Length: 148
Image (cartoon, rainbow, N blue to C red; front, side, top):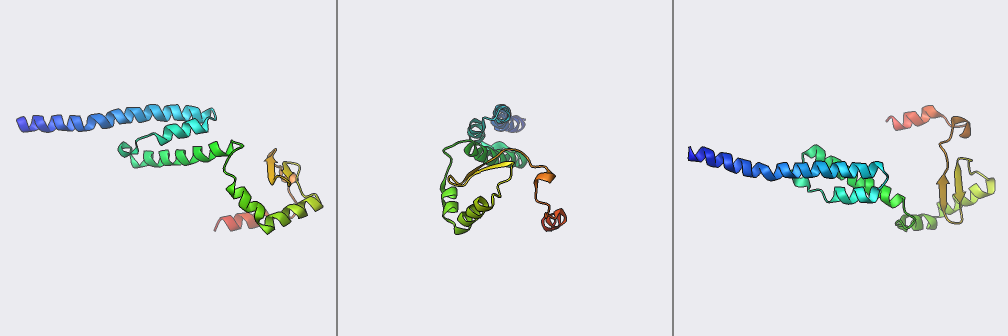
C-alpha cells in the first residue's frame, strides 16, 4: 500500500512542474501572438525565445522554432539599421551593377516599384495587375517549372 501511495505521490510531483510549464507556455504564446498581430515582431521574438521547449510536444517545439525564425526576420526587415552585409556583397557583384545600369538606361522600372539605383534600394508600392506585367510572360512555363 505504501508503495502505491509513494508511486502516486512521485508521479504527481513529476507532472506538477510540466503542468505549470504548460500554463506558462500557453500564457507566453498568447502574449506573443498578440504582439505578433500588432506588428511588434521584436517583442514577440523575445517572448518565443524565452520559452522552455523541453516540456513541449514536438508540434509545439516546431511552432516555437518557426515563430522565432519568422519574428526574427520580420523584426530585422522593419528596421533601417538591419544587417547590411548581404546588400554590400550584392552591390559589389558585377551582374547587379550592370542590371541597374541597363534598367536605368532603358527606363525599365515598373510603376509599382520605386527604385533608387544610387542607394541600391527599392520600395514595393503595390501588387501589380496582370496588365502591368510584360506581355511576353508565359505563365504555363512558370507553373511547369515550379510544379516539378
